[in-house]
Length: 411
Ligand code: SAJ
Image 1 (cartoon, rainbow, N blue to C red):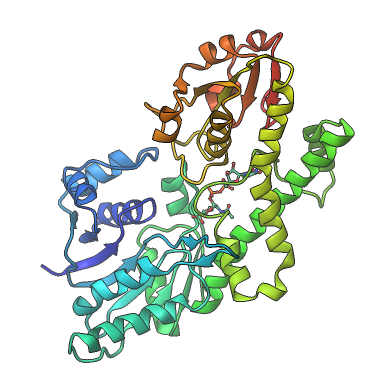
Image 2 (cartoon, rainbow, N blue to C red):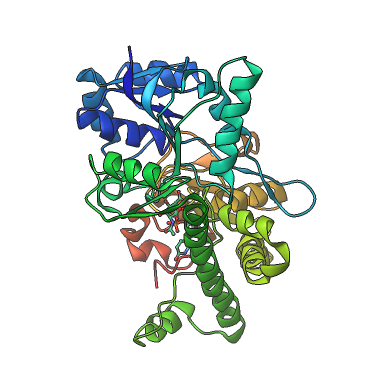
């Protein structure tokens, strides 16, 4: 069977994208390396948490428009949506394009002349060209003829976890082609469901734009985090300062927190830094400020804990941000693990979006409880994530406890 679209990588971006196309009548094949993910999707179920995604996937698979598999299949369009992490190493983090390379090589034998190949993964500058080269190289390795008239385009995803399905449809998009015709064809494809504006450009500009968006947010959060340290020293409420400063017509300051997590904001600035290390001191400093915030929170807890023989610390929230279950690259989890490792405090954790604690915390005999139980048992209440449930907490429960509110939720 020849499909309209083959989506490579059925994760947080690939699965919603494949499902939206499928529910708009496209015949979609989802390619993934995980048998578990493929089987789950073919049953019409999902392996990630995102509001309403279950309903969409069930409709896409049930309607016969979405099939998942482990083997690449021919299609008119390929959309690559695989992770682009970085290597941490000893020095500066450097981009790891291993997943994009293996996805490109895996589809190389089934790409046909005239096909449209789209890279959606957030990528360092030049990755769309590298994708083209990997596909051509793999074909030559396999003794297949070189491809003619294939169009390569970078269309970065820009959707926010927690509201992906709405943003997928409503956000503006950028289509950056290695050829203008490719960008135009990508534009026509996304028009299937996208009601936002679709802007055409070249691939390198599109790569740079996406990285710029996330690096800009990281720098703005770093500014807020730096303010929170200054205000703490000066004994001033940072949230009042920000709220009042934001009344100025040309000032919009973001919110401080316990650090910056997730797979995007804390990663993407490094792709820009890697492209020009000598030209990016601001972005590098922003990364250091945000990466340093968890340690600052840990020191705060430790200094308060000194007055107890063995303080009971309630950590509220482990996710990387509000109202999601995603613990990946979460500063809150990092803080909870470090506090558990201290061995000098008793840790109680509450995370309403998960059923059981990650192994690292289970090994340290940390308990997962309800919000009320955690607060009732605590000497120190450490609020790490501004989950809806924590905002609803009866404030009288907090009396006579030391409160460290890293998000300003209870001010
Ligand atoms: N955070 C703060 N203070 C703030 C805002 C966020 O501390 O004022 C923290 C959050 O708690 C979290 C981290 O920053 O730990 C990132 O959260 P986020 O909501 O800013 O962003 P992500 O990582 O969920 O999604 C971002 C989005 N990018 C931008 O808003 C520029 C999204 O649109 C992208 O599609 C996504 O990255 C991506 O995949 O690149």
